[in-house]
Amino acid sequence: MPICGQPLSRFRRGRKLAVLLFACLCCSFVGSGLGQEPFRVNVRLVNVAFSARDAQGVLIDNLTKDDVEVFEDAVPQKISFFAHSVDVPLTLGLVVDFSASQHQFSKQHEHALEIFLKDVLGPRDRAFLVGFGNHVRLVSDFSQSGAQILEQLEIYRHHDGHFPELGAKETRVLGTAFYDSMFYSVTEKLGRESGRRALLVFSDGEDNSSSHDMMTTIEAAQAANVLVFTVRYTEKQHGRLTARSKYGMRVMDRIAKETGGQHVDAGATEPGTYFRHIAEELRSSYELAYYPSNPIPDETFRKIAIRPKVAGVTVRSRTGYFSRSTD
Image 1 (tube, rainbow, N blue to C red):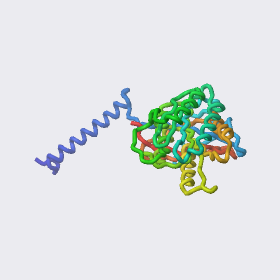
Image 2 (cartoon, rainbow, N blue to C red; image 1 turned 120 degrees about the vertical axis):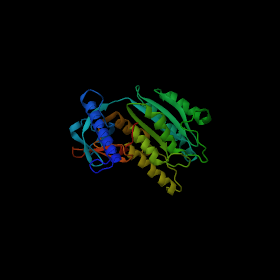
Image 3 (cartoon, rainbow, N blue to C red; image 1 turned 180 degrees about the horizontal axis):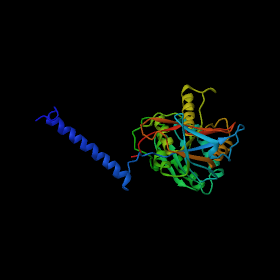
Image 4 (tube, rainbow, N blue to C red; image 1 turned 135 degrees about the vertical axis):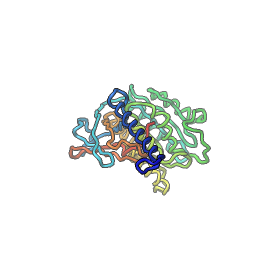
């Protein structure tokens, strides 16, 4: 029988819809008014480490929360946390290229590592060492002893197959797993740690056997808030860079820039000089955090910009992150 000129079935569907809407409103009321857990959007706190230098390149150690602004995709964000730490303990990964293109630099690698471990690694710091060529191997796990790490390196130089591999076992035809060495150092080692973390990568930036690419590697470091410092040893032919060498140089520069680290030309700077600069930057660190005004994880890359309000100050930090669900 029709009701108000409508078929009975349509009336029943309408009544069911009204009941459903009423039930939803009741649930919303109960959740917010009677002590049950209200609906919340899962908003992830975004942490950003950064360093600041004046016009002469000297590190600045007296910035406050009011001296900087942070933007995400050009939208101002409210800083929820701000801190400056001096002489903080460091957790570091040392990644060394032992592929064929780096054989002539092996002694320089060892010399640079010895300087770093003796002069930079402090009593509260920890470091691990990864060697890579055709395989990515953990030469020394986390240690506070530079001497122990160097001992493991000497064994690796003669018996590299005795050391465990990082990451998935891959069938590699060629001999330089540059991207995989960093990706697995972040995801399997540094990503599980807390505090000030960084990778120091000694290589020429060339890759021919990784299962990961440059952007995946950068994303992993950005997601874990790990700074990557790239120390480049580039082979020249007749005193000139080859096209492949130029490519590797740009790769190492890009990775360092995107993660908030620094790209160093080892042929132009003494190890003691650049290690001192790296150590100063790591130990004099600022940290800020904010809840993004756009809380929806939409799989897009969010650009982060930290802008100092003080004239002549430059800031170095990672360039952004991919907004992904944490579930």
